[in-house]
Length: 160
Image 1 (cartoon, rainbow, N blue to C red):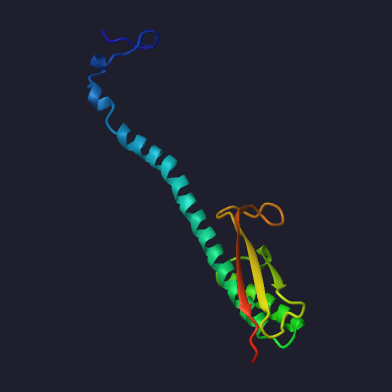
Image 2 (image 1 turned 120 degrees about the vertical axis):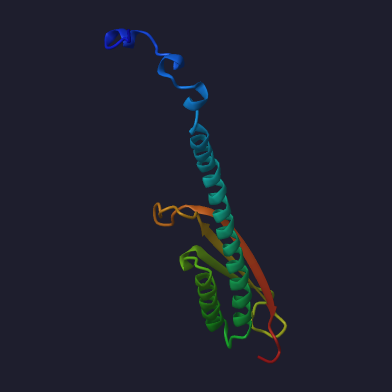
């Protein structure tokens, strides 16, 4: 006679009593295990690839910004307008790569006291804090994935 109620709860039901084969009881669990493991392993790998892409983009932005800033500074009529043009060139280059312009800093150094004297070497260094992708801004600047720096040097020509 089949057991019901309290008697059935006291003793475990075996696979033979239920008529379910042990192989059938495990059917479908491989799919669940695969999905869980795939999500646990794939999400960090994809996030790492996206972060490396952001860092590479910031590197390209820094190199382009430094190169253009050095060129426009070296061709400026005076140092004040040269610095202003160089800062604008950095902002344009950084924004072209989808970065916030506030994350970039620029420094200008010259080999001579008069930066725009013919033959003087003008070096522009640009540093960019690459933002951590897919993270909402925490605080004023948010989290950074890293800081990349690039510099470029231009010789001030005799004929500008």
